Image (cartoon, rainbow, N blue to C red):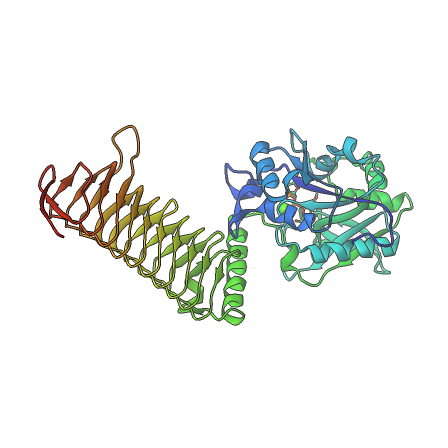
Length: 461
Ligand code: UD1
Ligand code: CA
């Protein structure tokens, strides 16, 4: 628990109302994605781990979407306050006054654009705050290049004096490498008392939350600074260049973990794109330019060739996905092969040893054990039995212009090349269709059909 020495409950306030002009985007900054989820999701996830009473998110730009993203991550632990016009970080906190002023709680203030922050670090910040008996504790780091950040200005005794924004700083202050992370722990009452005195007397004419620290100090309160060692963790994302840098960092560390802990081979780790939630089994080989997205699970001994994209799907062991195949929301059991240039989507299921080859699309269909569709085929809304062969150019004509219909093909069937299966239709076990057949009626078991429309030509019994 974070607040061991203080009995005060914890509330988290996340500032996420700004557009983020430096992103040069029509989308609010906190909605831009990092490692597959929006920035705001990362922040509320870190906050949730602290077991706060509530996570209050200050929303403004694209409020509805920001709210949805936060709710999707932490459910109704998240609550929202609106800051209609963005007059600065002080004004953002001000907009939650009625919620927090009288709650007699600790208020942990986070920025929606500082997504790498770890809950462990936040715990330490709160602990430091409680031990110091402070009214305000600022999380700081030292940076090689502090350009753009607010600087922590200290006096001759090294005690905190104030925070000065880069654009308001003197040349001398700009030499300071210690910066304000934009993450703070406050005594709620002290915070809202001091906030009343903040004036927009700066270069941007904004209400700066950072001024609160100096005000608390002047009023005799204790302001402490918690200097954290890992500066990447508290870096704010302000531009797309920074976003790409962090994407790269997250990606590299996920791939490193897969190599070192899980025994996955990457032919070229710098050209693989693997989501943080993906799981990949031992001795699987990932070729260059592969994307593994979302909550994908891949078994052991698989080979994923170049240009493949696998999203929210489940692969068994020893599966080969050949070049430029797409597998989305689907399941491929052990010892199957897919591709090259195959497309599995909307809950396509390949059972053991099934094979789907060149330019084959499978939508919402199941291919049972050992069944093959090797070339130029569309299988939609179909259930196909075991050991069946689907000839080149076969199409399940599943759509009549209004509704989708099902095709059922039983075990041990041979569908001839260029067969059109006009659904709803069933092909019985052990039957065959001749090349170019247009099958409009059910085919009984053990029979050969051919022609347009296909008729029974002979029994195969
Ligand atoms: C802020 C700090 C700076 C610190 C830096 C760390 C101030 C004045 N400066 O600067 O000292 O080094 O963060 O990243 O606080 N927001 C609102 N409403 C507003 C303004 C901002 O919700 O009216 C939100 C933004 O959406 C963003 C966060 O607050 O998520 C930070 O705002 P931003 O404008 O990025 O502040 P910085 O200039 O980075
Ligand atoms: Ca920022």
